[in-house]
Image (cartoon, rainbow, N blue to C red; front, top):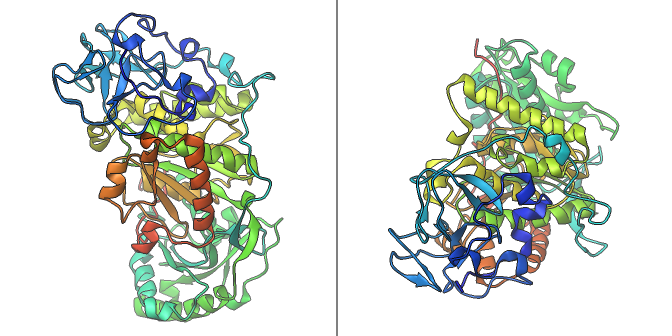
Length: 577
């Protein structure tokens, strides 16, 4: 018997509730004799992975015909009766557990991730040289809606103690923040440099006078003009600006424009209820029922140019900091958290360590009455059937499939393919096809019901699991979810993302211990412990407690490094005119 290691049951893609042998084409070799037919799998695991990496390979599902290299495998070495053939297999990459003829499906997570482009022998490295994507959408996807759950097997809800709390900033409109920033937003790129110069007037020693304020967050971008008035592109930007101005983590907001741009104060007021005030001290109290957000607005041409605007903005900002400093933390229930689920710089480990760990957190958060938001639509393609099976109803599934279809057409307009998504780093880390990457990415959403599909930067409801339409570019994806109201970001990485964000803290989770220790200053949590014998539920419970501490003000790694001033990247669709 091959000594394939066990992994926790909660890391399975089968956890999404769809039988892989019915949701997609079956694995023709699932019952074959040979190395791939032996060894314990995640389905017969009662706990965590056996300690250490001497087992060498991990089998993620009993229907898989590829196994995962838990460490670097040397050509010619033997693990049980599996001999590594041909070439070495890097950690996090795939190795054939049985012969896979050309044209046959390659199965991982119990799901097809592509087809063999040539004959693959037992023990050979499986990657771009012998595997191609073969994603197909089931035309009868409507029959899958809700099949992940039934009366006999409803959506799982973790057993969680009745009371979990954190220390947050309660706003007049009822929102609760995890941080207390003063926000500066550019209405157009022409005012971007001025925004940064204004913030530079407040170095750390000056900000120290306001101990209840976490800092100044800057949001500048590349658009705001040369676009159709009230068209799709401007509407998307407007939603982002309003979402940041009225965010629970923002104690006060200043927006700065040039004066002749399309994105005027009048446009923002009429189309997005972002109301301009001339004096930050006149900020009205907003009720929970109100849809309007008030922000101090300055216009460079009206103020007399660059220097005059910076001087005026400095005076406003001093007042805004004084006002924001009057806020203090208070104990609030954990259901006030809205989690942005993100992955960036993913590798072959991500889909069976860090991403499922975040999925376990998402399950806990929704069970508490909070919200969790998955995004990056391009990185759901190939795994969309799993979300369809978990959709609350057909309208949710239809909306998801409409977004997937839009992206395929959008990418094709520019001569691209969805399978162009996996980056050079993704592939170096062991991910080969978009389907493989998507299957891992979807596991961040946990096991619960998909309650809705949101447009980019739409307001996130207070409770439930949602998908927000966005590109797979991390800064744009996170910007949309923060604009929607998410107040914590859980960010998994296998290659080593150094992403940070303001005004929302980013908790970075390494997919394996080598990365965690190599980039210790950038990482907050080590999901590699799952490969060292820690059970999924145990590690998820520990991480949940840690995120409550982060929500209460403990600085994340990226905050300690001062990151987040340049990661505001609104996604907009449309021509530059």
